[in-house]
Image 1 (spheres, rainbow, N blue to C red):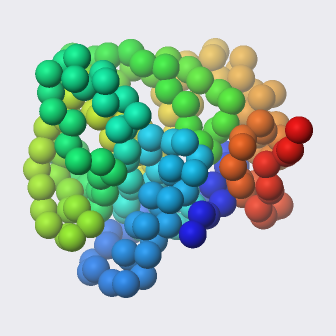
Image 2 (cartoon, rainbow, N blue to C red; image 1 turned 45 degrees about the vertical axis):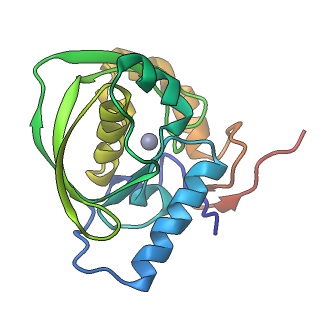
Image 3 (cartoon, rainbow, N blue to C red; image 1 turned 45 degrees about the horizontal axis):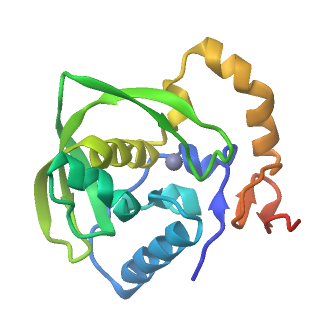
Amino acid sequence: MILPIYLLGNQALREETVTLEADSAAVQRLIDDMIETMHAAKGIGLAAPQVGRSERLFVVDVSAMADDFEETGIPLPEQPMVFINAQIVDESEDDSEYEEGCLSIPDIHEVVVRPKALTLRYLDRDFKQHERTFDGMLARVIQHEYDHVEGVLFIDHLTAFKRRLLKRRLEEIQHGHTAADYVVHAKDQGPIEPATD
Ligand code: ZN
């Protein structure tokens, strides 16, 4: 089932998430729904708070960028990937710059500086534990989604000056005025279908 994606301004995006203690049919259904929602919105990652949930859970699918991985020679793990109860164990000292966007903040793209690589401890959808180091595009997407389960958004990483420049557009997004081609959930308004032209 495709779920509405919560826009900037919803409190769910700012709340701390809770550790998932045990697997259940409901957890597996939520994972399936989040993957379906991410694919339908053409996203490469989606975190539980973005669908109004409080589980420490996010999904990633960078298979659309498989060519980039072939170039680096690093094999791409099977996609989509599911990250439950993720914790960052280590981060590289080297940083990288990349222009990010977010399904919860449509139409805005800004360069964000983050560690180039990180080591993450997490459970997959079978609740099997992994500790794994990620680099490149996967490290980038994982850090963006990890921020979401910490209540952090990519615009928080921008300078105060940059945020001031974006202020008007961010306010419009909070009121549900976006060009998103997927169902969004604006604060105090509930679900909004995409505009048809
Ligand atoms: Zn995001």
